[in-house]
Length: 200
Image (cartoon, rainbow, N blue to C red; front, top):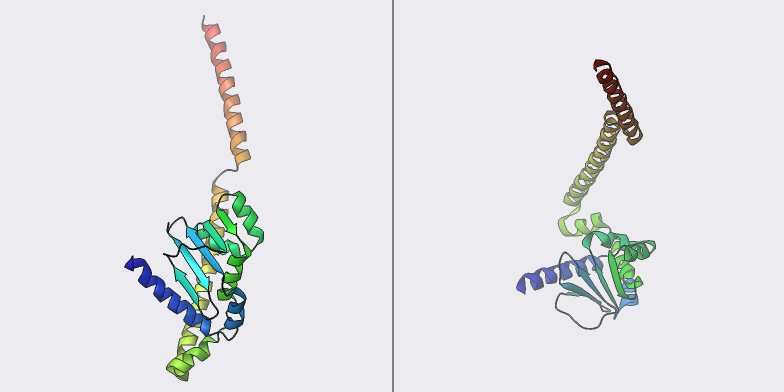
């Protein structure tokens, strides 16, 4: 079990250090203190239990105690849980099973997604002003390049689909073509019978 415990402890340590960088974290964490959530992802099999205390967030693959909410789902579905409007649809589609308080998962998600961290300032404190500025500028450039690449890819897909639509016939056109072929075949059969009668 070392292969699950050690990465989990590192993830837990990293998560709590990131949470500590936002001054609003204690306030948000206090609202969730004592709450426990268990997530079972079909891809992983083993359930992960998240426990929030007044001072930290604990993660465990081995905890089997009672929880306030237990979610059974798939990894791809988790981002959709941010919007409560999706929950009913996912349950009906058998992509989500929730026992307990469904809002707890959203509140825990907001603990991380609502973080407001001044990353340039944090970097500056650790590596100095000039290197922090260089790293920040490089990150912003790479972010712009990624957004441009993503935009180019979307445009390419759109252009390809439009070209494909010009190359491939629409369903109605194909059905019309089939109908005309059947009519032509019927006329050929009729002509062949007519010719055979005259030969006799």
